[in-house]
Image (cartoon, rainbow, N blue to C red; front, side, top):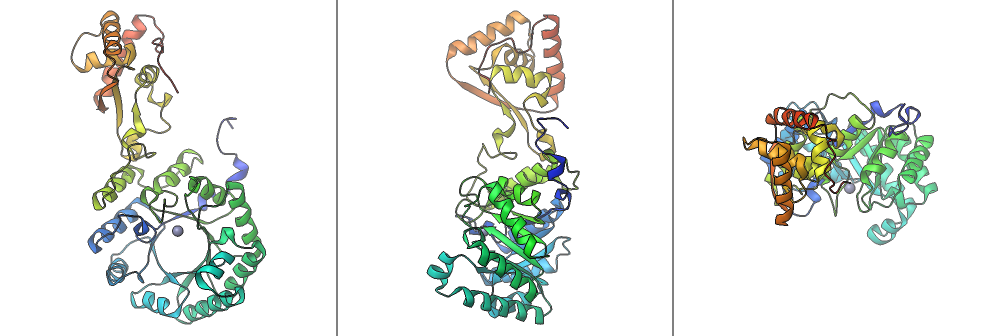
Length: 403
Ligand code: ZN
């Protein structure tokens, strides 16, 4: 194993079994400015199913439109499991039943701050209410995920006992959300291991991104034995959202070398789809799917990219349906200049390239433009490389910023 390899084989024996639940239609709709129509929800569900997520979550208690969406989804022949979320209350369970749900995800707060301030009930009341709801759902023949809301801020002893009691009452899965993004990865791993030592049920984790740790916490939980990670397209969700589908899916592939059957090439399209349905354009610097994710600018980077894109790309843009782009301007250097000359059908001698690079620098106009680089890339890069080889110069010769 390469010392710099990001995963150690001893950590990830179960990663290949970890599933993905997409909550774009539930958590995602809790994002500011995100409200899907029924038609849009069905399209999103269909595309997520084609991508290959294991489960799709929606909350029919939100509105009549959501109830109709769930009904449509149950009839759409999706391969993914449909999860109908609501409170741990009989009326919400009835709503799921009336929409044809087979799986319900019910949640109840378990942290003292939620019990005291939000619900104004005691710890015992919370547990009794939850067990009552589980028994009712079981009596209706439903499969149940029970989510311990705000689990990561709850008293660990109460949390573990609560998890054990709801499992004994009949919950089929236990959900551990980091509801306000309060955890470090090692803390998330510890809480998963602790719950697993009390409960012999599959564990879902749902990590919020308030400190930018949703992905790290989700992966740490998976390494510790969690069975399913919750995501949304582009990490949509309440406040600043949860772990993103593209990042979790790519982490499986790149960091854990998982050979999964996901349609990775749909990731950029999924992101664009959401942008087209909302007033939220895809931020250019969003990992994997943003316009800048494969945009190269500094001269040393361009020189290396023209020789071998792997020099500055973790994974090829084609894999995730994105595009490679090169920025031309003040920082292009002679490698970028030579490539630009060839793109324009001009002779890219070393002298010409150096002259153009110097001219671009002298202009002091920063970035002038960027170009998507597709089919012509290899051909032009090959010529550019030959030129450099002929000139017997190192590709990184122009001194520019690198990072
Ligand atoms: Zn959430």
